[in-house]
Length: 165
Ligand SMILES: NC(=O)c1ccc[n+]([C@@H]2O[C@H](COP(=O)([O-])OP(=O)(O)OC[C@H]3O[C@@H](n4cnc5c(N)ncnc54)[C@H](OP(=O)(O)O)[C@@H]3O)[C@@H](O)[C@H]2O)c1
Image (cartoon, rainbow, N blue to C red; front, side):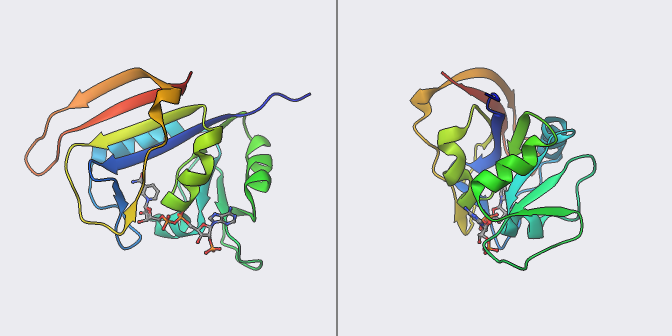
């Protein structure tokens, strides 16, 4: 029997739970973009249609698997899936390590199957229209943590890795 893929959820979240505003990110933290790149290059990324449409363009060296209910939706460079099982099946063609990159609709469907959560915790409240509640974190252990202080306009933030117990 084939073993299950390793599913990593990657998200950046303000302390009031906000992750997005008007289909974009509420903050600009270059170190977080770099961190996201390091975590995702070489791995398939599963995302919602709205998140795909919020990207500045295709991100190099990472397959984009886009979930939509729209039967005819397509976009250049995107592989389309119409349910979670299909998305995981498409992703597994590339790697046994799958990144789930949002948005809120997608995160909540993947919490239960996540093996790992890579959380960028931003120590500030932001205005936004997309909010994520974290799952019961007692099911996870914090295995790595890196803290960054506020600097000029940039808020303090941390990178935290949680692994399923
Ligand atoms: N801070 C972060 O880490 C982070 C990460 C990613 C995104 N974001 C932000 O989050 C916001 C977007 O999030 P969102 O929750 O509005 O949208 P989303 O989760 O990116 O996309 C939602 C769409 O995905 C499709 N979908 C969801 N579940 C599905 C399923 N089971 N099967 C098939 N299709 C499914 C539907 O597309 P159709 O409507 O086409 O059917 C749905 O409308 C943006 O502001 C973005 O910038 C933030």
